[in-house]
Length: 161
Image (cartoon, rainbow, N blue to C red; front, side, top):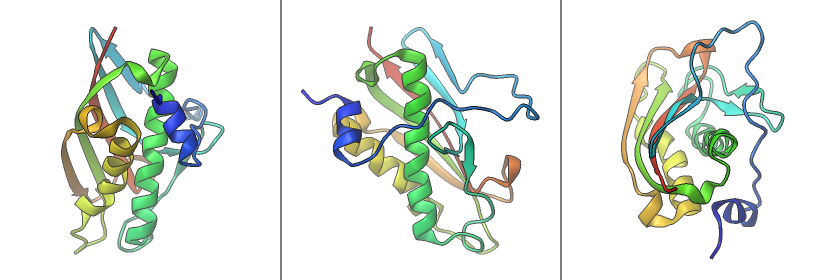
């Protein structure tokens, strides 16, 4: 059976290093918070391969195209999985994706947030398969996000032992 890590590699992708928060930013929370058989995933931006916050920054529909935003949304999936793996060890411990919440920093009049977050959802389903990867989801437009991020995605998963 193919592991999620193997599936990511077969897609020609790789997980970045776990997130490295700039020393000038105080975050009094964990990016991944495991409680029993659940993992709560704090809002994630895209990370570069070294774990640094990589944006993108600005508003979708003004500073980013739909295609750029969808790709960034997929890449946020890589960031989430990198931080999840660092916390739980193996991604094969994910028994089910329960909920995903995507926030899109949207230019006035932009109403395609659901299509932006499809980049994340499609990626998760491709990596984990439809049974484990299927999730409930909301995608909303916001007037701004911390650090002027263009997209932030959070979620909740069920873990196996």
